[in-house]
Image 1 (tube, rainbow, N blue to C red):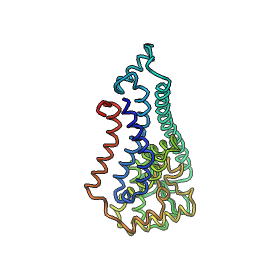
Image 2 (tube, one colour):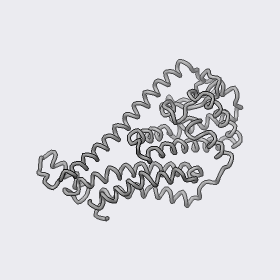
Image 3 (cartoon, rainbow, N blue to C red):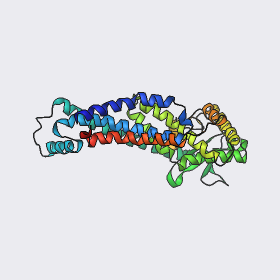
Length: 321
């Protein structure tokens, strides 16, 4: 496991700095946001696995030829109190660091979920007081606000789309359909789960470029995916007008229209204004580019699978290295 630990450490460094920086600056994700989303998830998972795996394999190297043997030997040392003369202080430190980092990541994930659920319940309670059900749109609440506002609030069977009276007054029927399709796409595609995972990743490791750049990029990608879903129902010009109108509402009153960048939006799972700037969304819609060719999408997806496979192989089959 000696060489495996070094290779895992090298992979962790690569996935923590140059790769996310390069991907965050790339232009192609706007052409195929789903493919880019898969790659970001692979980078985050493989980076975390490599980080923890590098420390764990280094620490267990004196007592096992692979990770399974090392864990089994460590279990015997801890439970059956077998001698551990081969484990030096540096190995004990590495094992402890790996376990602490793992516990920290899991704890932060659960804590972030608790905070999101708490914020979501408060938001729903507020909506129960201030909103009224739409008469002609199922699972839709209307709030008495003059600014054009639209967002969604996930909650399983209780998921709702929230619209303001000001929005409904200024949008045409087709523009309102575009907004509704956009928001419902956030719910149907479970974007709030992605926001939760990457928000937890950033909260756990705020100093890591991967976590910062990934959260920002994922916020942008989910807005692109929702816009693309809306384009299946309305024409491009209609969606452009709807985005511009809703964007004007977020500029007037940022608190009224939560997007993925603020607490209400993280609990809501995506909005229409802040995940990617209105200017950026309008630019993408006004100057559309063709999606990546099929071979390029398959190549990125294969790379994503490879990113997950490499640390797994290094962990459980280190003798191949």
